[in-house]
Image 1 (cartoon, rainbow, N blue to C red):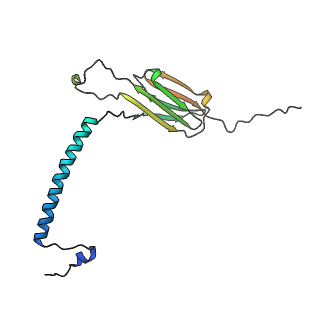
Image 2: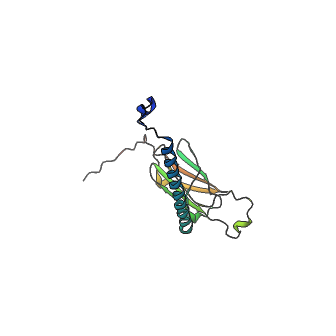
Image 3: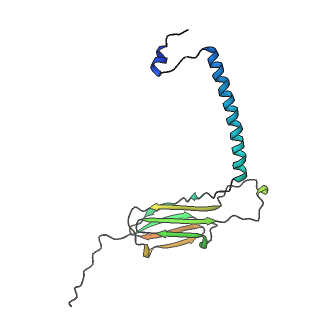
Length: 165
């Protein structure tokens, strides 16, 4: 028997199912869910078997400030060997990359708490002013890395001598 569509069915384009039709569709959906769950469990097992450890690179925390003549970058790099630290400077960017090696003498099962970060880290900073990369210097003191980046003096003038040929 044909029933008139409700306002909501006409508005949304939905259709009305008879009670027995709904039971059939629900049973069909339950069978689909069961099949999908079985497939997902198989996929998870395959992923567990073939999963390889991906190294995640952490973002380095910094302080960035200026003096009248320099831009200063400070960051904590305690426990990082100087050979494992790489600083790349351009006129308007600085990138600090490094790797903190984990102490391999302790078994993972022997830890009660393990909160320190071990592994690769990096940070790229867009500088607020142009700097002179050739005159930059970096100092590490008690785990604090201080990078001094001299600002370019745009108002500095020099008198050019003319040579006669």
